[in-house]
Length: 88
Image 1 (tube, one colour):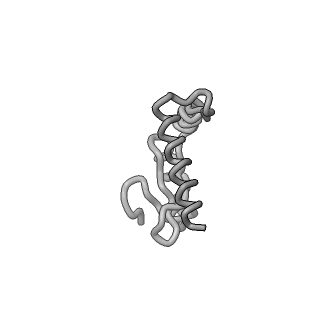
Image 2: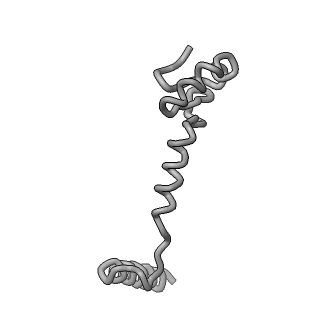
Image 3: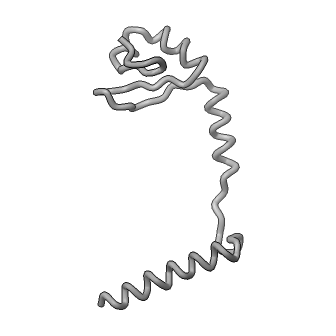
């Protein structure tokens, strides 16, 4: 039996795969193993949306960092270097 709506055990998946897939087409479904979430089934549109959203996040470099963030970064590096030298 399902633990809660949208959450099924791996045993449920083997017994009720058709029902679980049908539900996953409507909204994400969690698959648990030993009562711990292990997998998420979701429709392809939701998956592609997540991929597009993650592609919008880009890795920045020091050159693209704002002056404020760069200052905080430099202060953190300096503080770490000072504490490392003090620990020697």
